[in-house]
Image (cartoon, rainbow, N blue to C red; front, side):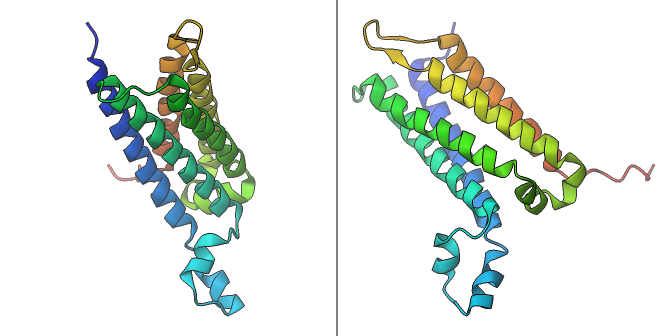
Length: 191
C-alpha cells in the first residue's frame, strides 16, 4: 500500500522548497567576500555585488539556486496534477526538472574546482574533495532521475519509474552525506 499521489506530490514540493532555502543560504554565503571586492572598486551598491559574478563560488551558487527554483516549478506542477485540480501535460512538468538537473551538474562542476572548495570548506579542508565528489555524484543521480521521469508520449508511461525514484533517493543521500562532512568534527580529546 503506497502513499496517495496527492500526499506524495505535496511532500516532494515541500522538499523542493527546503532545497531552495538551502541553495539561497549557500548563495548568500558565497557573497560574503564580494562586499570587500565592491568596496575596493569604489562601488557601494550591494546590487553590484549580487548581480556580477566575481568568483566561481558565486557562480556555482547562483546556478544551483536557479536549478532549485526549476525543481520548485516542476514539483509544484506535479503536486497540482496529482490532486486533480488541473491537468498538466507530462512534458510541462518534466522540462523544468530536466533543466534543473542540467544546472545542478553545471553547479557541481564549478563547485568541484579547488578555488571553490577552498572558499566553501575552509574548516573541512581535509574533506573538501569528498564533499565536492559527493555533490557531483548527487547531481548525476538527480540527472538519472530526470531521465527516468521522462514520460513517453506514445504510452504515457515513465521511461524508468525505478530510476526516477532511485535517482532522487540516491542523489539526496549523496547531498546529505556531503552536508554531514561539512559539520565541524567534535573534539575527541575530551573524555
